[in-house]
Length: 237
Image (cartoon, rainbow, N blue to C red; front, side):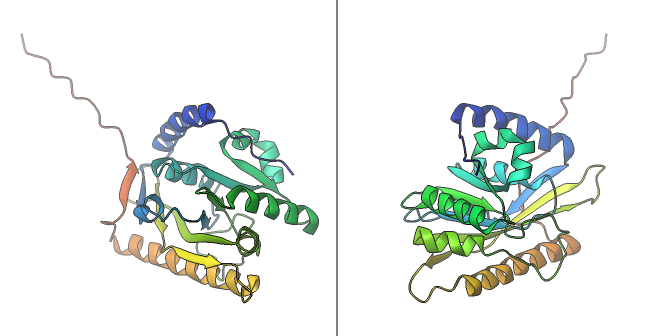
């Protein structure tokens, strides 16, 4: 397993680059429900589970976490992390889902990062990129097993979507769902919890799609917006 090698200095530098990159590639990045990430109770760690439909997802969630000033980590497929090792310095660590032993090691590592802290963990429970409108969502049980080992955590769904609307470049959207406090008691059933999480994220994805189709985007605040062009006035001779 490849552990995270977080670097505060590297995160600050990358944040500037990432914001510039998103602004270049997208018309905007808009999010609804960001206050749920920013103002979550700090008496337990936070797990943010999102759909995975694009290579851009990792950069979008990093930006969301930076805006909310989270001490964030992320679980990432080992083959991708080896291809993009810089993500380790942003808090990413690896998982090999095809190997039960390796997957269990990553789950225990994640639980150790979270246990008794105010940290946040991003995870894509689908384990692979799938179109946003894929139904039903098929989740691995990783989130539930991490909570079981951590003891307690807040969990919130984050729906991601990319759309071409009225502009030349696409727009990126995110919708953060309600926080749920999950305690790993004796009646905690990982498979049941996993199914409930999948249903919760599905509802947020459906709402995000409906909002885009209807043009009801007032609650989606822009956290990365186009730079305004400077107008230089010249006095006539």
